[in-house]
Amino acid sequence: MTPGSSTSKRGFASMDSDRQREIASKGGKSVPAEKRSFSQDRELASEAGRKGGQASGSTRGNQE
Image (cartoon, rainbow, N blue to C red; front, side, top):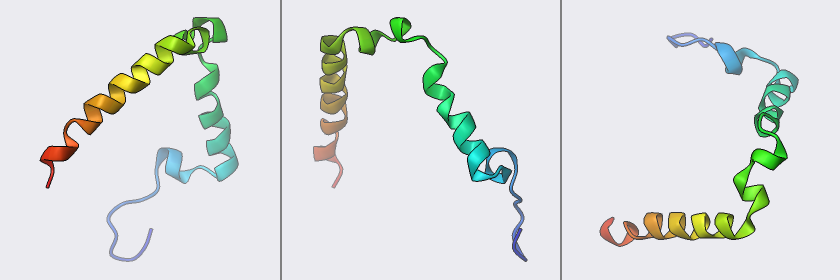
Protein backbone atom coordinates (compact mmCIF):
# COMPACT_ATOMS: atom_id res chain seq x y z
CA MET A 1 0.00 0.00 0.00
CA THR A 2 1.35 3.42 -0.90
CA PRO A 3 1.41 6.26 1.62
CA GLY A 4 -1.86 8.19 1.60
CA SER A 5 -3.72 5.34 -0.07
CA SER A 6 -6.73 3.88 1.68
CA THR A 7 -6.87 0.59 -0.22
CA SER A 8 -4.80 -2.53 0.11
CA LYS A 9 -4.29 -5.48 -2.17
CA ARG A 10 -6.86 -8.08 -1.33
CA GLY A 11 -8.12 -11.27 -2.94
CA PHE A 12 -7.07 -11.81 -6.54
CA ALA A 13 -4.85 -8.72 -6.61
CA SER A 14 -2.75 -9.96 -3.71
CA MET A 15 -1.91 -13.30 -5.35
CA ASP A 16 1.23 -13.89 -7.33
CA SER A 17 0.80 -13.97 -11.10
CA ASP A 18 1.23 -17.76 -11.37
CA ARG A 19 -1.62 -18.34 -8.93
CA GLN A 20 -3.82 -15.83 -10.78
CA ARG A 21 -3.13 -17.62 -14.08
CA GLU A 22 -3.93 -20.99 -12.52
CA ILE A 23 -7.30 -19.78 -11.24
CA ALA A 24 -8.18 -17.90 -14.43
CA SER A 25 -7.45 -20.93 -16.62
CA LYS A 26 -10.08 -22.93 -14.76
CA GLY A 27 -12.83 -20.65 -16.07
CA GLY A 28 -12.87 -22.19 -19.51
CA LYS A 29 -12.67 -25.71 -18.17
CA SER A 30 -15.63 -25.52 -15.80
CA VAL A 31 -18.13 -26.66 -18.45
CA PRO A 32 -17.49 -29.78 -20.54
CA ALA A 33 -17.07 -29.17 -24.29
CA GLU A 34 -20.25 -31.08 -25.15
CA LYS A 35 -22.26 -28.70 -22.96
CA ARG A 36 -20.95 -25.51 -24.57
CA SER A 37 -23.58 -24.54 -27.14
CA PHE A 38 -21.30 -22.34 -29.23
CA SER A 39 -18.69 -25.08 -29.59
CA GLN A 40 -21.40 -27.39 -30.93
CA ASP A 41 -23.17 -24.95 -33.25
CA ARG A 42 -21.07 -22.43 -35.14
CA GLU A 43 -24.15 -20.90 -36.77
CA LEU A 44 -25.62 -20.17 -33.34
CA ALA A 45 -22.37 -18.46 -32.33
CA SER A 46 -22.34 -16.40 -35.54
CA GLU A 47 -25.93 -15.32 -35.03
CA ALA A 48 -25.25 -14.28 -31.43
CA GLY A 49 -22.22 -12.28 -32.55
CA ARG A 50 -24.24 -10.48 -35.21
CA LYS A 51 -26.99 -9.63 -32.72
CA GLY A 52 -24.46 -8.31 -30.23
CA GLY A 53 -22.78 -6.19 -32.87
CA GLN A 54 -26.09 -4.75 -34.02
CA ALA A 55 -27.16 -3.96 -30.47
CA SER A 56 -23.92 -2.19 -29.56
CA GLY A 57 -23.63 -0.43 -32.90
CA SER A 58 -27.17 0.89 -32.85
CA THR A 59 -26.43 3.27 -29.98
CA ARG A 60 -23.19 4.64 -31.38
CA GLY A 61 -24.91 7.16 -33.61
CA ASN A 62 -26.61 8.73 -30.60
CA GLN A 63 -23.43 9.25 -28.60
CA GLU A 64 -21.93 12.51 -29.74
